[in-house]
Structure formats: structure tokens, C-alpha cells
Length: 549
Image 1 (cartoon, rainbow, N blue to C red):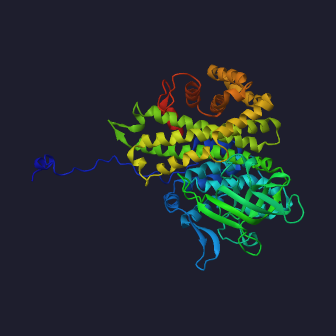
Image 2 (image 1 turned 90 degrees about the horizontal axis):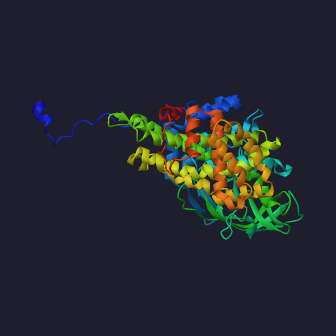
């Protein structure tokens, strides 16, 4: 057969063009991230080597496969051993333990509390941001550990737990604390009838002897959402004679026996599947009272400041992971004679996603800086007001980002071998955990109702940027009116606060093309509810700002 005959033989497939895009691997997720490197270089330069080391693992092919396997091979509950003894054990795939070892060994859970250096919360936030690009299931136990340490350190009788939980290491052995090299902690709060209303809980705790902080109580009742049932201890709430109280429940008693814990079943969740969320019961579980009786809700809320911060940062990290996948693919795939990222119909989409990530990341890291200066009254107010704002906004936006990224890549991103389906399933959870969107809006309303002037430190920070941008100045003026009736303006007020704060941060820290595009689109007119409706902005510069490679 001649060459001419071969070319006209339509029964034979020709060679596949060189237009297939391989996986995003072996790129340092920290060193190439303009926002994360800025945070560390500016506020915690001592942490650069540590952040770079973790950043090198994010797109490591072995770590990617480990994260995928941990989600594919979900935990299994064993209530009885082979002899019929109650064990209420959860079996995990080895990949889960590998992820826990990497996360806890990297200090994702504790660096803020162990580093005697300025910017420790900012450095730890960068680690959490990086880790949420790896895996959301194990970001749950790291976040709970981070939030629990101040509570555990506040009482001398809890010091042994604090000492083991801050350790940079992971010990999965299900044994008493004294036999552990490192420990983990869970939060068991909600009940099936009350949900977020902890004061409606009916689980009870009675003292064995004396009442009061540090004393032993017996807990009886149930918890409907109990993540990480294999943790070494749990912070829980129960009704005592003095009201709703906080208690620390070890999983194992000192003699090694199971501490009255029964795991009824594991939740079959949409995402976060490697994390063994469960339904449990307490049957005379021995516990230590944390703080005073009747102060349980306020004790738990003192740690919610940190968990909510972590979810805002984690959502930014999840946006970053999805965006990285979109840019990697669109920079390498061609169509109609150009790279996808250069097509007039696709460049606005990628630029829009980049703006969303940049605003979310800067807002999350700004809250971490507030924790670094928590003795400052103004910073306390910034944290108190902007934490629920950021938790509301970042966690709401991440679902749309992950969905749009799947479209930006196409069918290959809808296949389970690709990381994007995992991102998509993970995204909605951050808006539910540690307070739903409505709870965040209500929290902002409570702050402003009690003290409307609490918004001033936030607006004072926005005003210098507003002086340069009329749209931002208009937003500030509108917010000043809205705070007078926060109960009536609700989500709209919180949305305007989030966008104004993000805009001001980008004006201060991001390239002009990025900041101007964000202000013009998010605070102006002509920007649609979906992504890709940007007009008249420097798409190429915005996309380049977001590229990892």
C-alpha cells in the first residue's frame, strides 16, 4: 500500500496528536504560590523552610495516590472482636495513617502553639492551606487539635493531654495516654434533635465525687456527629447540675479498657469519606470537667474562633488546589490554534477563578495575623467580626469554584481518577462544620447588635484603599448604614463586609491588575453571578499571578 493509499484509508486511525495533558505533579505548591510566599516572607520568614518542605509534598505523585486511596478505601467499623468482646474499633486503610503521619509530622496541627517566634499563627495557617490541597479528611483532626490546645493548656489537670497533642508526630495505637508518643482529639458536640443548638442537648454528666473543674464526672447520652471516633480523647458537652458544661472524655481508661464509648455506625457522607464521622453513645464514660459547670458553650466557642478560621483558610486551600488543576490543564491543552488559557472565551473564566482564590486566601491569612496579635484590642475585634464573615464567604464560594474548574477541564475532571471529583465533594462540608452559613450570619448580627462600633477597626483598615477606589468607598458607606440593622440585612451585610475586606487586602498586597479587577467586578456592576463575565481587565496578568508553573 502506498503512502497515498494509507492517507485515504479511513479504516485506520491516524496517530494521536500531542495534545494530551498529564497530571499536575512535582511542583512546589508553596514556592510558586504568590500569596502563601508573601505571607511567610512578610510575617514569618523563619517558617519558609518548613512551608517549602510541605509544599513539595502537595503535588508529589505518591502523596496524590495516597490521598486518593484513603478516599477510595473508606473506614470500617468493628463493634466486636472475634471472641465477641465489644471493641468499637474503626479500621482504616494504611493510606489514611500515612496522611495523618505526614500532616501531624509537619506540624499542621500545632505550629501556632509551639513556635516561639513572631507570626506563628500565620505560619501555621500556611501549613493548613497547603494541607487542605492534599486532603480534607485529615484536615479535620488537624484543625480540632489546633483549636483544642488553648483549652487544654488552660487547666493544669489537662496538661498531659496538651503535651501529647502538640507533638509533631502521629501514633495510631489505641491505648491509654500514658502509652502514647503523640495524641489526637475529637469534638463530639451535636445531638440528633438539636444540631447546632448545644443548649438543647440532653446528654448528662454527674460528678463521681466533688463537683468542679478538673473533677471526674460520668457521662451518659449520645452524639449524632462525632468525627474521629478513634481519637484519644474527645471534647464534649453535657448537662450538669450547673447547666451545659464542657468535659474531656478519654477513649481509654487508665487500665486500658474502653471508656464507656459505643460507636453505633459510621456516616455514609457525600465527601470527607476517609474521615470516620460516627454516631456514638456514652455509657458512664469517665470525663474531666473543663472549666466551670454551666460554662460549656462559652468554653467551646472559645475554640470555635480557631476552627472557623481554619475552615476559612482550608476553603482557600481547596480553591487553590482546584485552580492549580485548571491552570495546569488549560496552559497545556490547545484548541482552535491556541492554548485554552489564551482563548477569549476561557481566559475570563480562569482570571475570575484566580480572583476568587486570591481574595479568599488573603482574607483567611488576615485573620491568622489577627491571632498573632491577639493582645491588641483592635485585632480582637477584627478577629471577632471577620472570622464568621470569612467562614461564611470563603466556605460558600469554594463549591462554585470547584464546579467551574471541572467545566474548565472538561470530562477528564469528572472521572474519579482525577482529583477534581474529590474537591467537588469536599467543598460543601466546610460551610456546614463548626456552624452553618446562617449561624455565621447570626453571629455577625449578635456582635453588631451588642456593639455596632465593633465594625470600626475593620472599616478603618479598608478606608485607605477606599480612598483610591470609589467603588470601595461606596461599599464602606453602605456597610456603615447596614450595621445599624444587622438583623434585617443579614447575608447581604456579611457579603458586603467580605468583599470589601477582600478588596482592601488585594489593593494592599496584590498586583494592580489583580486588585483593580477584583474591585471593579465584585463591587461594581456588569459582573454576573457565574464565573467568566469579567470585562475590560488584564486577563493574562491575573492568570500569570495565579500560575504555579
